[in-house]
Amino acid sequence: MKKVVVILPTYNEKENIKTLIPAIFDAATSSPNWHISIIVVDDKSPDETGKEVRKLQARYADLHIIYGKKEGLGNAYLRGFSYALEAQNPSVVFEMDADWSHNPSQIPGFLKKIEEGVDFVIGSRYMKGGSIPKNWGLHRKLFSIIGNLIIRFGFMVRNIRDWTSGYRAIRTWYIKEILGEMENYNGYVFQVALLDRAHKRGLRIAEIPIHFKDRKKGVSKIKSMQYIITTLWYVFLHSSFIKFVIVGTIGFLIDFTLSFLFIEKIKLSIWISTVISSEVAIISNFFCNNFWSFSHKKVTHAFLSYIKKFSHFNLVAVGSIIIQAILLHFATVIFPAYLWYIYKTIIIIAIIIPYSYYMYNYVIWKKKSRT
Image (tube, rainbow, N blue to C red):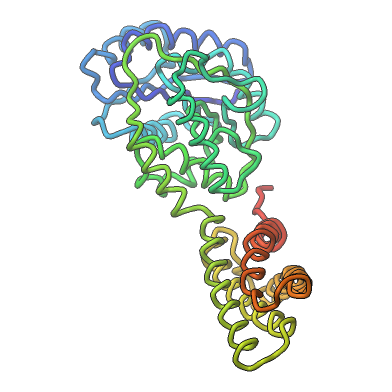
């Protein structure tokens, strides 16, 4: 029988934990192929959450508790993961809130996805069948919905809709692999970082709909402004798309400068100047993207493989050269030619950058997949 561990970080959750733990064990009976245990990671709650858990241990042999300092959600999960791996050696670990925001009756649905071959299952509030509380204020709805949209746009990942959900089932081989990398991420940005790295490593990720509920007892621990700042900063530092835009800006400056030199100073024709300047910019983009923007899936094989990938890159990039040269030519024929630099800017921003990102990300630097 396969083992699964549900990790519950707690701080002053006495009233919730006394009913949630029995409900989790009740839900386990619907998954006969799995042996479920619970690890409560308590931050020395002054309301005696730990004492309540110890009472429940008399009823449940598979209930465990560990203690630590109050150092944030990320540190709590790291302690829970480490203890689970050492003491339980499960196949799957669950992340789950201890305030009844997550319905334990959905645990079998997560495990069914795992049995289908998924590595990382997310309880999603923002897919069909999922929801957030109707009584949330407008500011909280905007905070949650727009926050997830910013993350999705920043990472340019279309198939993951809920990046900040705290209800997850994860294969432990990934936890073992990632544990040492997560020590610098605390608070709720830990959840974003854990999922981001899973996606970049090519894990099979799926979502199931959940109905998120507001806690009825206790006080929320989330600090909204701190969470927003740390999450946005993480996205800025780790987004391939943002890095790609920066690289593209550098390429644009190279392209624009050479075009100006060839057209205005050397007096070459506009289309020849465009071809030359674009190709130089493309070469610059290849190296910057390979070693920075898409460094998590960069070309690191033998020299011949590297040359082959560079050739593919240039072949794909020919499309952007052709598009730019044709559109710029027609623009200068239809409109005043001396405004070529305006047309070139519009073409690059509106057409070349989106085209290039899609082709580079999904054709040249393909997502690494697990077999």
